[in-house]
Length: 522
Image (tube, rainbow, N blue to C red; front, side, top):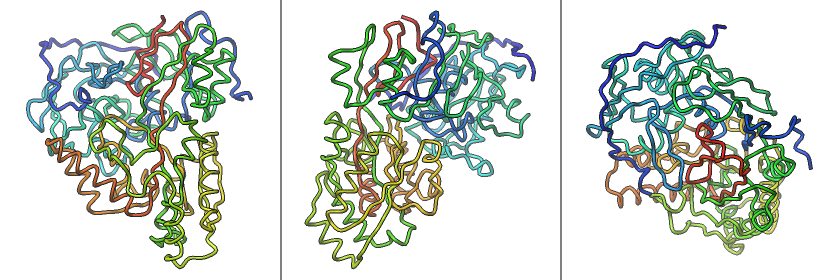
């Protein structure tokens, strides 16, 4: 392995104004993890919690927030989310960026960003490689929807280029560039290992570097000595994967971590009597939780049966028992405040047992026994138990199958799925919600194997629709189609509550999710 070293080749570039253009961001017990020592020792180590373990450090294959929380500090993007209470973005690797028309975005890279392990300065070729590899059919990137509008990146100079789109693409500024798909990797580094990595990065470019990963234990990031931007605040960031909020609260109150999300049933207690030198903060959430039904399973091939299940599930009971009335029922996959949010769902939140029984009778099914796969955390287990009781009321037996995170998040390709209690992260544009339920995502993120031509067309057309009213209507219709399939019962968008030490200044998205590269000491 080469020593950590960056050789800089400075090229004069003119400073240019940048244009936000079509940005949608401006609109809207013991843990058993073996913690060692005291958290924040000497003020040089930040210890924090993630709800799932890392699965990939390749931006083409990263799987949501738990991976992006690690990638964002070690890679750079042209732009990054701006911490604060309003959605916005700020320049990162780009010295300037300008949308000149619907399909062309010019960028100029800063001249002081480079890669570790001797892979040199960041160039426009790296940008081209990073973005185009995600749309390469041969790579089969799971994050291809983020760059679905990309035609190519034109390199116009060592640090200048143009992103060329196939069509107008509103989510570019709210999802693609500042999130997972926007991470810029070293072309030389990736090509040196065959064009793809797993959990070991070949080269970093951000304020932190990846030091180590202990599966199911922790990920450790360390300060990048070659970073030329604002200095990283911590010598180390240690990220502990803890599935359950209750376990993370125990770790926090034992002074073993500095920042964590907390459960809603603990919120009032922590607000009224927080641990010493701690702050509790509440945020709206964009997560969405739902019960899915695997359409390819013969046991669920009867639409009337699926509809009976939809009407039997009582979401208000789940809100009370699982979320302690700290969250509200959802109407779909798009949260309040975003384009496409529905005022109400088609099947309603409260159970309609009479209608459920009628549909079950009409289905002609009898002696129905099903299973629901659930991530093993207290909120999910309680929710599954309520659903179990709901279905028993109409004569359906439901077995609850519990999984640890490493197993659960690999269930997407399982042909034995029946019902699934699931939860996905979200960004501030409805495109990111519908992306994972199109036909080509079947068996990847579309665990239900939902396939609908009208839905797919809406997903494609809405990404460039500039009329807000039309775009809103399109996304509402997309959620109607999901619900009409009988494969979905929408539960909640949850709520986000965090607790952190007063010795740190967290940098958070408006939905309360952390941006670790911008965390600081108080």
